[in-house]
Length: 584
Image (cartoon, rainbow, N blue to C red; front, side, top):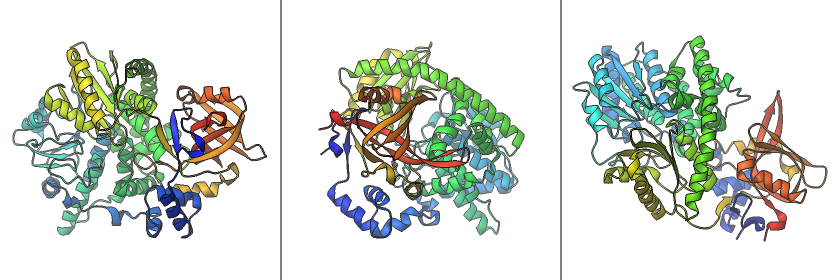
């Protein structure tokens, strides 16, 4: 049954409330002293009344898994400690995204604290592609005693064989194959022989666990290891930017990492926060939408190693220069992205008119550095897994995909690679990369569509928007916002509390920024609520508000604290609206 009679909203969603059993659970949680609005959200997240206090104040020491629960961890940690003790030459081969850069930076800061250094190598996205390649590994092996591959390497059998006697340790999280590459240790919760209990970890979290075990070994030798808690800002950044689910230990890592980030002690992140004009305490939103995209901009359209260099540097002047450069590159990336997104959406929508589980598009010369972002835009707009491919002059297409909840895109892409339909491909549940021959593009996408359809992608019917309850504008106080934030951080796998505000009217509306809509909502009395609808044009919200012409609306969204020039106020971040006249 739809909530408030909204069976199909402006964005095409059915609004769904809590079922009776969850409502009863919420009432029991409220009896422990929590506000009812927060209690409803906790109940929807499956938190039992007796666990509410612990959930709202998670302790990392209670949630951090034993590093040795991962295969090859002991060998990897002992090799790192031995390299430090012997003063060996260490190379770090990192992926060019935030997770790779953060993982590399973790190792660099850990080694620096022990008086050691490392060579960081990040492959060029266009010239070398994702992951280790044989020429680069061979060159590193000539001058280094140990190569550590972070956020890559699990599928790089041929490339790692080029190390020729130099030890290789892999710290990764991408889906593994039945056989492992030739390496001393492959630490990866997504290996075929792992139980999957830690499959939600990003590579930086895996690297962090390796350093936890390395510190244990140092203590056994009577040496104090570096302060790992002070490095959790890097783990939090990677976890959010890599769209890892914010559940279990991930939630605790990000929560503690945000506290570390607020201290502004890391030169690179401090400089980046300043150029991004981060105002107020950092949140998961800032990691995912302000800091992460700027770090990624280097690997997407600039020098591949800029992000890793920014996160690793202890020099303030260098950090400020790198942050400025990344900010400029990010602006260029956004301009390119806007052009490709428009063309890709037109393609995808035309294909979906005939049905299908997959939204996909391909174009000549589309920059490989932005296809992943465009795929994310398509996924959000069309409610389906999306793949966007840039076609190259050599007859190959290089693409990236993003998935929706409950659909494992990485496994399907890896299967196509194993079948020979793709030149190569891999990833994890929510994201994947692939290379395909242009001549086999239609065949590959049809096959991928079929595999995703088997998992339920593209099912007909409106998508559901689950709401935690109904509020009136007068209940939207800073005290309530503060209470709701204790259930955070929010992100992938941990959606923020969302409430419906019924029978509101738009007292004022104006366009701000890049197509966003700033609103003042009223309940017909003197109570008003400020609101903002991001990307209101493409989502159809602007047209719907114009069509309403002052008639009542049901508005759904999340409450947040808006900080501006030292002042704090409540703001509703609009997710969806429904015209009351169009409800059932």
